[in-house]
Amino acid sequence: MESFFAFFRRIWMSGITTQIVRAILVAAIFELLVWLISRWIQRRLGPVLVRDVGADPSARVRRRRLLVGAPLVIVRMVLYTIAVLMILRIFRLNTAAELLPMGLALLAVGLVAAYGPLRDALSGYFILYDHIYSEGDEVVIGELEGIVDQITLRHTRLRTPDGQLITIPHRHVGTVTNRSRGKE
Image (cartoon, rainbow, N blue to C red; front, top):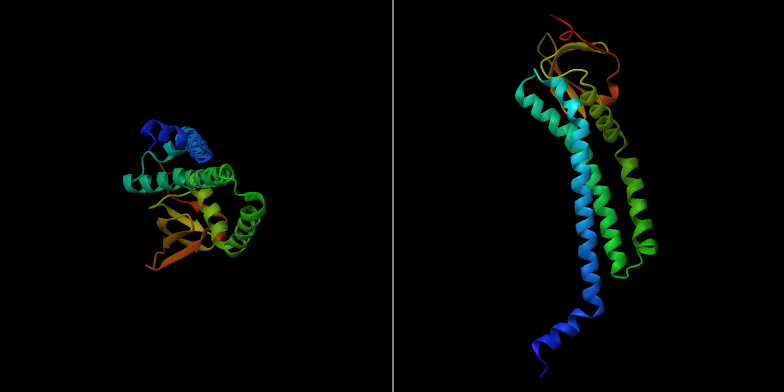
C-alpha cells in the first residue's frame, strides 16, 4: 500500500492536475479582467450619470442600472465565452472544429431573429445615455405628445393629455421636443 504522500505526488504530477490548475488560472485571470473592465466602465460613465442629479431617485436608479448594466452584461458574456473556450482547449477539446462554427451559426441566427428588439435596445441605450428625456418630462415624440411615464431599453411609455398610455418602440423615436427642459 502506497503512502498518502506517494499517492498525492502521483495524482499531482498527472496531466489532469496540470490541466485543472491551468483552467483555474485562466478562470482567475478572466475574472480579474471582468472586474477591471467593469471598474473602467463605471468610471467612464460617471460624468454621464451626473446629468440626472435633480431627478426622482427611483428614476435615477433605473437609469443608472440600465446605463451601467448593459455594457457590463455584454463584457461578461464576451469574456466568459472566451474563457470557457480557452478552458476547453486546455482539456484538449478541439473548439475550433466543433464548437466555434456551431456557436457562430447560433449567434447569427439569434441576431437575425432578434434584430428588432436589439435595434430598440440600442436606440434606448443612447436615449438614456444622452439623457434626451426622463420620466415625468413633457415631450413631443414625432406627432405624439404627452408626459413620459416609463423608459426601458426597448420602449418609452407616454401618457397623452387625454389619459391614454402609448408605448413607443425606440426604433420609432425620431424628433423629440422636450418641453420640460430649458424652463427656468
